[in-house]
Length: 214
Image 1 (cartoon, helix red, strand yellow):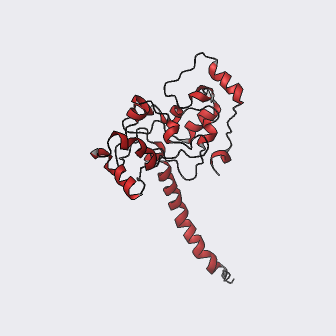
Image 2 (cartoon, rainbow, N blue to C red):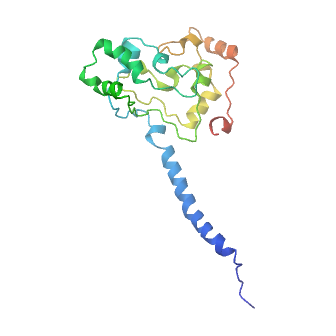
Image 3 (cartoon, rainbow, N blue to C red):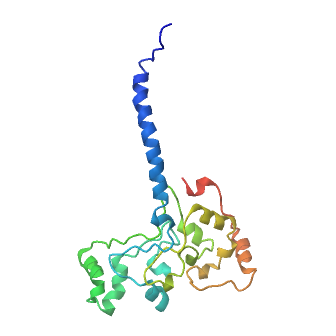
């Protein structure tokens, strides 16, 4: 009986198969580690920024509205970081020569943007639309916590899929009047207030995979 002979085509398939056997597990491990990175799940994650900026003073003590700095949060999927020009409008009136503001002064003079480090950094395979949430009554504090009390911004929630799904399944506690979206200390007046907001907006968050994974 003659031994079985592989066709010549097998010489082409074999290297590809060997590569897949090696790369697929490596890719799976890489994705797993990335999903569990500090930016994705670490409550309390607070990276060092290129210059100090106190949200406690700006959003808390001065009462600045979040949308003044993050002005695309209502109309776009992302919440923009304010440009140096936006910050400079105030800084030049309070003292542009303050040493702690040197990085912003340099950015203003050179035109080079400040390289802020993102705190809430979802994996690339996750899609999140700020405007879709804000327009339906989800306040900033629901995801970002009491920013107005943070000297240094830190991650307040895990941002994991189970946490997001929990809100999609029961959104009522997170809903508020549109004019209170950026309020840090707003509380529902009565037990039925959240339900009222739900019925007004007909909020029915999708739980389909394609909503966040596109």
